[in-house]
Length: 467
Image 1 (spheres, rainbow, N blue to C red):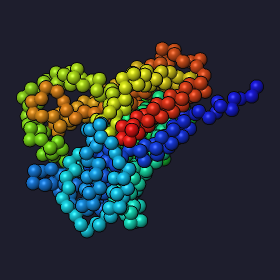
Image 2: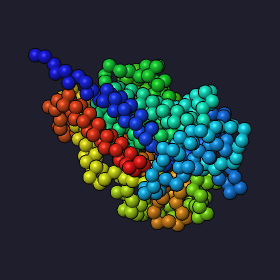
Image 3: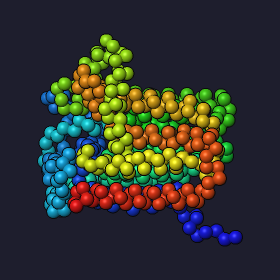
Image 4: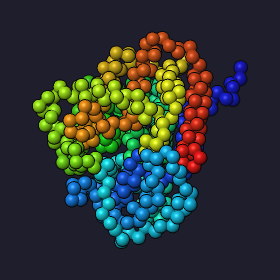
């Protein structure tokens, strides 16, 4: 009996690659310059790194991170500075063309502040820096460097995403929907440091999934080295995601060659990552670091309040979720620009349902560990990561004495999502769901959902800036 010519195509990794590259490149060109949250600051930090400044030291008179950078980097931002937070305003193609005529003039410099990104690790900017360096070699204008940085950011994210989906067949379908979620695709199409962070977290979790679901794979030296590199990248991009290292406990000891080798390699992994994360954090920031430009924000003062009443943080978290929980979900699924426009409520709810259903295993899905074992690793890792995110935003973004936390964004949940998908997929299998579902049909459904959601979101972006 012949095989349907349609069936082989919609394998999750192929779906991801095609949809990501088509709609990602469309967004790279459609999103006006600097119209992703903090993209101006990410551009300045990436450019600074290309000049050899890996650890930022300079601050202005207020203690705000700043640096002497070409004035042209500031000039090309000005024509687009009026767009953020104003959904009623539209972008102009003429402004983009005129900004492309502004030369770099690297010797003409001013002191520019960029507090949101100055203390980020260079690991977050590897692909963007490649694009900017290429632009400098070719003597291109700074706005062209921005677009090249976007392009390399997208390609790097797509490459790691393709590798992750291909290796982690047990969670391939939900991983596709997570990576191609409008918010994820949007940041991947800009200069945002979140794109490499999301990609590293997905690749790391996918490697864990592959090692626990495929009995033919062992943690030999090359795989251990790759696992170590991905672990380091996750920790150095954002230390808040370091607890995801707890997922390595899911890997059976026999994949390492026995209990003794398992203990040794695990100790090396944790020690190296902990040392690297501690070294970077101690060199790049402190409690005196100023991120939010407000006089009523002080990490030291917040620490003192917590020391007086440590349990006070719990009701603050509860109040935060009551006040902003739904907003986080909306930001997680899809947000355009600087909080300019959210995707509709019906889209948010539908996409969350699709993500849940994508975790249903097909007839040939690899076997995952029991749900209890997966939960024992995933739940603490995800919970501690989120608590660290909440604590850092409480210290560096929230006004002293505020009853809720400022600065948490729904997109911060994206690196945690592959681990949650791993848990949900194991739970679906435990419940006996999807055992007789045809994988080809599930893959095709995933492809259709991805194309329709990305197409709809692209139309929203176009309408926001040019409609």
